[in-house]
Length: 151
Image (cartoon, rainbow, N blue to C red; front, side, top):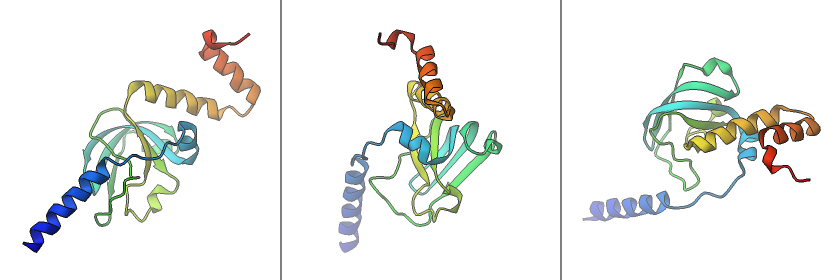
C-alpha cells in the first residue's frame, strides 16, 4: 500500500513539473550562452537520455556535422527548468557552455527551437551577432527587412 501511494505521489509530481513554465530568456542571450548550436534530427529522447544526428552546425565545433551525439543523464533528476527535447527532425538544439564536462544530472541543453520560423530567426541572429560593427549590423538589418525602415 505504501509503495502504491509513493508511486502515485511521484506520478502526480512529475505531471505537475511537466506543466511548469520556464522563465523567458531572449534568443540572443541563449546564443551567447551556448557553446554549440546545431540543427539535428532527434532519434530518441527520454527523461534520462537523448540521441541526435547533427545536420548542420550554426555555432561551435563544425566537426559535429554528420555525427551522432548521445547524452545520458546520471540518475533521474527532474527540474521544471529543464528543456524538453522532442523526437523530431530538423530542430535547433543549443548546448550549454562546457556541455561535454557537464555532470549530466540534467541534459546540458539551454534551449530547443522546433518551428521553422524560430530556426530561421536563430540563423539570422547568429549571423548578425558575428558582425562586430554596429553600423554594419544595422545595414544588414535594413537589407533583411527593408519595409521596417523608419524614416
